[in-house]
Length: 317
Image (cartoon, rainbow, N blue to C red; front, side, top):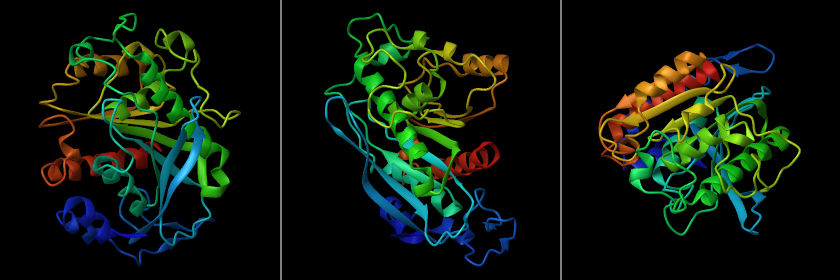
């Protein structure tokens, strides 16, 4: 169990203590048939959260157990089905963990506002599957033999299995299977985009194994459709994946001095989402790649990001 103040002390060394000033454990309950707390999903309404860690959500075709951690509001008595927000960690597809600071900065924050969150692990490569030059193209050339499309695809397949896991176990976690958001930072944000917008097999990367959208990491019989995608300090590998208004609402954050995703030009993205009519928000912040995810140094960006993401989720999820 994490108290609100202890959680922030752990990964911000006390800098986020002032965020607790909005907590009001005595917020009145609205009688709407399922005991919804006033302001839930748009502001802090719980004073502590509980965690369920090291839960196996699937098994990769290689036999690797796939694990996740779940965070819920402590003492939540609502009978309403709650929205779920999944976080996928970054690390260039070859490093990082579901317990790293950036993952906790998001997945520990939202349960105080009433959400259920999950931070997932996925299969990692031995080395980064692309170069910086690759990312600075308008879209990756997946016919290029030096690109490791297998591990980019593995991450997507595992993340889709995580979505299906929660749909399969929606009653257990008291979540609404039609109100799931998936997102992440850097490689995790890219993976979330692939889960949310890659909906035709012709969009699959050449050489993907297996050659299908859902993969073979578990929980078959359920869809991996989501309602919202949030991609932080990341971008699209192929903007052509955005092709209809009914696709998930998009929240995208990028940094002005990011040298990794500079090829994912925001003007092109804006033109595409406007053309399609996709619900979206683009948050531009200063600083280097994923500055908000750096303890202490990125505190101001993190505060802004949390506020903007919370508002977007409250409206679209």
